[in-house]
Image (cartoon, rainbow, N blue to C red; front, side, top):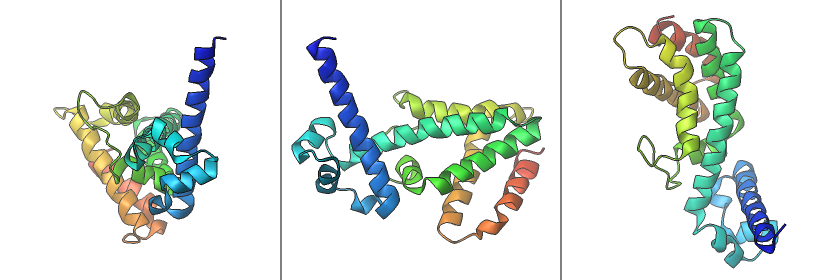
Length: 192
């Protein structure tokens, strides 16, 4: 291995450590607790080392969001592929989405609530974000219905899931009725 390859591997390792530590700190104490000073202390590097990888907290949030999108895509595909039939696939997808939001609130915030400097629904949208949407579209596109644009249907269903995740987390909707809400979404919005 060349010196350059070793340096690149070490740099990538430091970057993964920064992102993992930011995620851990955010999940423990919230995003307000994620500062370059705290991150530097936790990973035992100087703040200038952090700034050599990320220009600031916004880019760190973006990196956490990209990791989260990749994880969510895997979870959505696993859930829907394990189900049998269109209705079961859509319900499994919806539950997996909501479960991910509950289990990873800080990551979910990085993905959808905070400014991580990421472009959505554009040509320059990062691949992990496109893939997470594709994971939704793969299942939802098949139930969009005649004359309904699959992408628009997926956006609408996703918006409903996001609303359920956000309102439940904020205490506006009681969590004990989540399964009933998912069934309503599947039966009414997806008309299954």
